[in-house]
Length: 487
Image (cartoon, rainbow, N blue to C red; front, side):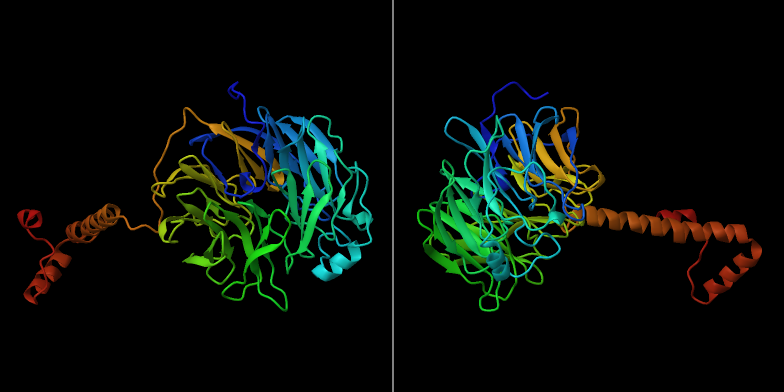
C-alpha cells in the first residue's frame, strides 16, 4: 500500500508531466522497483492495435484515454474507478487541471472524416470536417467503422464524470493531445491549426495557422506556446513559438536540413529542445527567447519521434530508437555519457526520477540509469509487451503496457531489491579490457602449451621421436623441463 501522506491534487498533469514536457520529477520512487499491480485494458481502433495514452495522475486516481473510452483506476490498487465512453479518436494524452471547485480532465475526441488507415492531406481533412457539428456530450458508444466522427475538445468533472461545457469544435483530427496551463487548454490539429480554449467556459480564445500539420504535444512555457510542424511542399519542418496571450508569432525556426518530421519538443528556462529525424539522429537546442539555434548534438541512430527530450535544468536526456540513452549538457550540447541498451525503443521516452533516468523498451524491459554516471543500476527481464509513457508520482511509477497484457502497470521501490552497476557496452573499461586479455592469454597457454605436452605424452614414442627431429631442425622442444615452464 502507498503511504498515507497526501499527494498533490495533480501530480502528473499531461504529456511528460508538465506543460513544458520536461519529463522530470524531482520527487519520485528510486530504484530498485517491484511491480505493484497491473490493470488490463482492451485494445481499440479499427484493427484492434491501439492501446492507452500516457496517463495523468490526479490525487489517488490514474486516468488514460483509449480509442473509445476514458478509463480511471485507483493509484493504490489498480482497480477500476470509472469508465466514460468517448467518440472514437486517437489515444493521445489528456490533461488534468484544477478547475473552480473541482478537478477535471480535458481531452480530444473524433477522427474527423478519416479514421486510422485512411488519413489524407491536412487540407482535405480540414475542408471535410469544417461543416461537422460537435456532439453535446461525451458519447457512451461509437465505432470508427460507423463513419466520420467530428473532432472536438471535451472536459469532464473528475468526481461526477459530467461534461463541464459544450464540446469545442476543431477543424481536423488532433494527434497532439492537450496541454493545459494557466486556465487554458492548447491543442493542435492535422490541418495545422493551434487552438487556445478557456478551461472554465470552453470558449475559443484564439486560433492560428502554424504553417504545417501539428501532430506532437504543444509546449507551454514562459508565456509561449511552442509547436513543431511537419514539412509541406512549400516549407520545411519547423518550430514555431506563439504568444500564449493572443497567438501572435514570436519566432520561427525553419530547420537546417530537410526532414519531414521533428520529435515532440520540451523546454527549460533557456532553451527549446527537439529531436531531428535525419539519417543518424540529432538534437537541436533553440534559444527560448529568439528561436536562434544554440547547439546541435549528434546521436548514433534516428531519434525517437514519439517522445520529447527530458530537460532537468542541469541535463538534457534523449533516447534513440535502438535504445541508446544520451545525456547532454544543456548549455553546450556536449555529450556527458551514453548508455546503449541495444534493444528497440519505438514508442517510449525516458523520464527523470530524482537521481535516475527510467525508460521502457519495446521488449517490455524497464531500466533505471544513474544520472551522474550513466550506468544501469537496475533492470527487469523482457516482459509481455512494450513499456512506454511513464507517469511519475512521489511514491509510484505508472507505465502503459502494450501487447497481450495491454493496460497500465505500476511499480514501487523494492526495499528488498538489489542495485547493480552495469556500464554501457560503448564505454571503454581498461580494467575489464586488460583483465579479459590476461584471462584469454592464460586460457591460450593452458590449451596450446600444456595441452600440447599432454598430447605428446599420450602419443608415445613415435611422436617423441618426431619432436626430437623437430628440435634438431630448430623447432622448440614440446616437452621442456618443468622448471623452464615455470620460468
